[in-house]
Image (cartoon, rainbow, N blue to C red; front, side, top):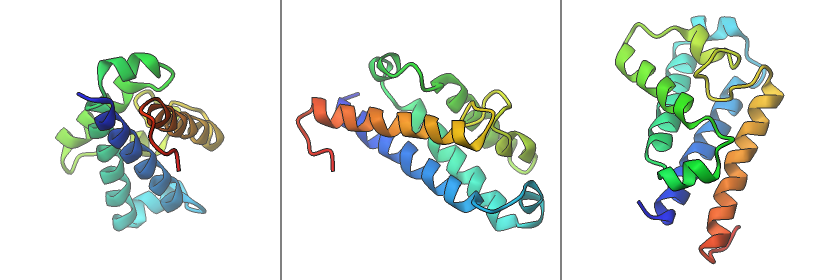
Length: 132
């Protein structure tokens, strides 16, 4: 897999993570149970993040080892095979192993998303591409 492919996947991860944060802004855990569109959207975004993470090259994963690649892909696998039996507590709670952020707080989740963005920009710079 080429670095350009890695760049595209990193962008997918960044964009889906930003959307997930946007969708959950000013929302509560109860909203996941009562707003079917919200829960389906978040589950889909986690699937996108996991699928993109699964396609990141091993070299890129090693280079950006701070990003929890195995857990990101593992969460995607759990969700994709659960169909209608998805535990929304696992999707919602960043402190549970396998969640996107691997953090205890929203701030930690944001920091991990920033790491993914930085990785994306570094790959672009290494390829001599515009970073904006």
